[in-house]
Image 1 (cartoon, rainbow, N blue to C red):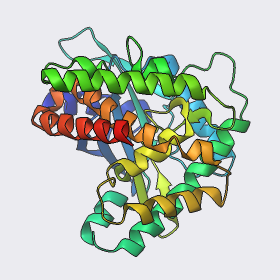
Image 2: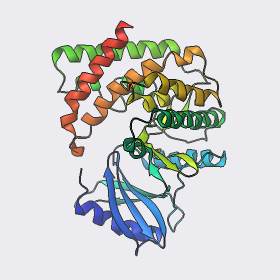
Image 3: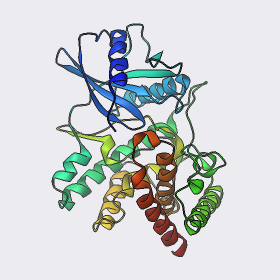
Length: 328
């Protein structure tokens, strides 16, 4: 989706809040947020216009509290650029609208987006497994910090718990009701919802596998530099099961011919830093299914992205995934 001139000008008008009024600014992408790259004096930053209904200001500020705690524990995550008033965000209304939008800035993480690195040589299975091993180690470090962290009073983030995933009003939308579903497909999505709900109720929320998670650990949110892998984009971070983080990383490689090796590399990297027992590992297929069906709701909620043409294929994949899960 192209970033229109109104949003670009809106972003440019916020730059003085960070003493960046003379900086160069250019659009990057529109997804959960509208993002821009800002360059000044040989330093670079990411400016993000946050979606109006996705997070409150309190939730955004809580997100910074957690990433600061991650940095304090030695985990390399993006660092916010505070405003001249020492704030993490500014709030302004778009021109011609009374809709408030929260805007924040982060210091640029140097390197290459891992998805682009992999695309240059997609047949290098050894490299792919090496990256997944490194990702497993990073995920383990994040989960270790999160389970030992004392959540501050008044900390507010959403939860990818059973209600947030498949409840009456899931955080990413009622995937079983999107209008593109045919009758048989809708029935299958209802079955997926039921089996997910029942399985999560049975498993519960063990302290060792439920805490704050990144929740969007795919290859576009990893940066490769000479220092290794770095995780970016904590916008989806919330409370959830650790297996969900692992499933998100694995999801787009489910049909890759080297998937067994990829899964093994991820788990080996993870277990080198944090235990994951057999019962916990056994739920990864469930969370792969969760990712498949949740993505339908996510995209349906965001028609402004102009990606509706992908929904029928995503429905077919989610239905195939559900049938496979129910049969095994």
